[in-house]
Length: 229
Image (cartoon, rainbow, N blue to C red):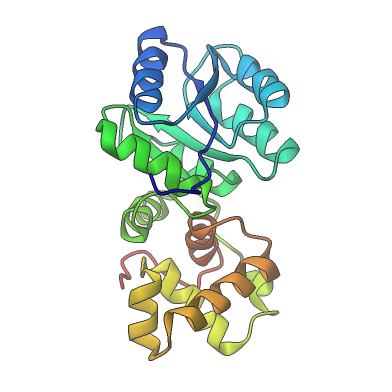
């Protein structure tokens, strides 16, 4: 950890005490403070309101209130908070919904300690979790499985009318999973220019991060299942 780096404060929400304890141990031994734990979604919402964590590790399947509803409420009340969804299966049918509502990404519960700590630090900076290609592959699978409503043809691009042609191209490539470096190479631009375009897209469309940009690119039909960067 570099000098002056802001250390994210974490809340862990999982109905299994062993999982919570294991994640707490992993994070605290790597200098990341865990400010609280919750055993279900309702406890997670209450704890987030009280503790104001920077990052919430949120299990999807929990009693009383599931992780999706808890994440939705937390993100509405605490827009600067970042939520990482935890799942046992990489094709959990709820992961697409989690990305759509504003979660910054997902982790499998058998994640390595190093990856867990790196993921928490990554999302706390405002970025989406995992490589864009991994998020793209996940969304693509669910787009193919028709777990999302298909946009009406006439309305497919309505949300995108405020974007310039260059911004549309950047969003299309974001949806295909390209990183900022790959975007710069593809468009023959500097990375700083690409970051400016990405920031403007997020502002115009009200997006939190790259995960939501990928989702929107598919939902508007800008990217079709099967396309890749």
